[in-house]
Amino acid sequence: MTKERTELATPYLSGLLEFWLTKSVAGRPPVPSSIAPADLRPWKDNIAVFEVIGEEAGTFVYSYYGKALATAFGQSRLGATLDDLPPEQRALLQPEYETVRRERLPVARVHTAVFGGRTRSFERLVLPMSSDGVSIDKLLVAAYEMTPRELAARPPMQSPGPGGSSSGPVPLTVQKPGASA
Image 1 (cartoon, rainbow, N blue to C red):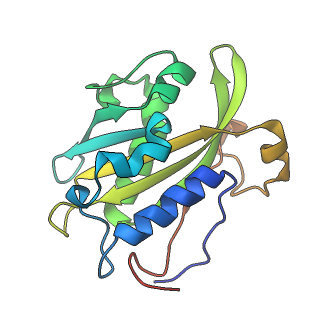
Image 2: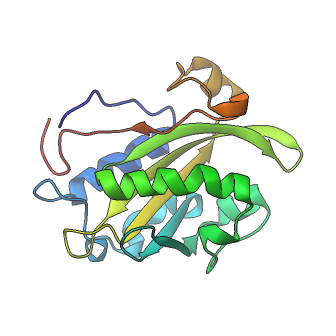
Image 3: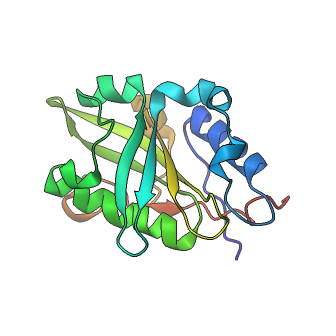
């Protein structure tokens, strides 16, 4: 189950992915209790953590929302669910998060849209976590705004989705979580 690993444009996301890999054991996503809040300090302002409630079509509840995200998007979503988002945002995120739950592997994408009246691009990384080693019960999501230079230097991850506003999610299928390359 090995695919070519997509390189991330944002060094912080590359670092977070490497950290996630060090916490993965025996081909399974990390156990949330193996990650101390202090471990996430380098990324804390740019991450959101979701609690996943339910087995099939899960409910995703924001249990942490970084300060940089709150500033970038005009508010904190702490305690909210994906259902509280506008329909077009929910339609983009719900399938992506369900894919991460089902595949149990990271996904990354670049999303370009109008935020706060101006067009901005963010590179995103979604990382699964599992308390019991079986079901994905948390998602660690990080997003960093890309500079025009980073965006221009990055080859497209996928062709834009409907409306041309976003690149679709790209599985970052690593050799297996916890396996060495």
